[in-house]
Amino acid sequence: MSQTLTAQDAVRSDANIITVQQHILNEQRRLSPDASGSFSWLLSGITLATKMISARVRRAGLLDVTGQVGNVNVQGEQQQKLDVWADQALIHCLGVRENVAIIASEESEHAITFDGRTGRGKYAVLFDPLDGSSNIDVNVSVGTIFSIVELPADRKYQTDPTTAVLQAGARQLAAGYVIYGSSTMLVYTTGHGVHGFTLDPAVGAYVLSHEDMRIPNAGNIYSCNTANWNEFPAGYREYMKTLREGVDGRAYTLRYIGSLVADFHRTLVNGGVFLYPATTSYPQGKLRLLYEANPISFIAEQAGGIATDGKQRILDIVPSDIHERTPLVVGSPAEMMRFQATVEQT
Ligand code: AHM
Ligand code: MG
Image (cartoon, rainbow, N blue to C red; front, side):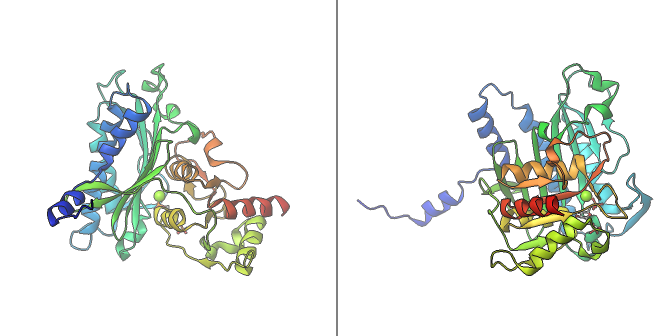
């Protein structure tokens, strides 16, 4: 017997959404039935803050939020008004989650702890509140990147919070980013695959739109600020020369937005490779290990990709400073294997 769907049934199926909160709870029940739900409570702080940031970004041209504040942050970079606002939104939303003991942000020199939370906080959240913010004034995609680590049980972090967050990326419990692009999208991993959610403005929720994202095995795009070509190490130049000539009959094209989240998101969806090498101006690389390279690399690996600093796996680097920088090369297995082989031979 066949079944005919009525208009009412169609509405019902359209109502069958899975929000990011629901997804995390489902994952927790499946993987560790005893989980307390405290992790999803933490994550709801991030989703709330990023919805607030998204709303602000969407109205950027109408509010007095574009342009620079006039301050220079710990990185020596001009703070944009929205950088500061996004940072405060995240600090506020995570500050009221009692299981968050430490926050480390691109915008703050030191790790932040919360008064009166002795012994209750279990997690540290590290983030870049508004990545690529120099693009805000010209209406180009920006993003928020976050990384979550568990704190040592000895509670020594209360006296030395900065050292407590200096953990190798392989120890991340979860990582993700939100891209404020043509739509606002949250992509996250807890080490069990990568899942993408699109913010439905009508519902006000991140709705599952990209389940179990996998990076293509190969792509035809490379992404790099090649204006710095003369400053790149020889191996990187050799590698990009091979891409310009084409590999195995495959011609490459170049795309570079200048927002890591956007350049990486395209790489995740379409495949290919993103490179930010060390340069003369940034001898250690420009991107920050703890709240840019680590979360991006965790997601890349969980999606089947590879991420290195040109010499070693990003997730194996043991950091010595919360604002440490690193070269970053991340992408599809085919491009990354060729990159590694070329660098080794050069
Ligand atoms: P930011 O965190 O201050 O925005 O800087 C990081 C950004 C990345 O989003 C992007 O990949 C890179 O800087 C672009 O740098 P460049 O302009 O040197 O190509
Ligand atoms: Mg950034």
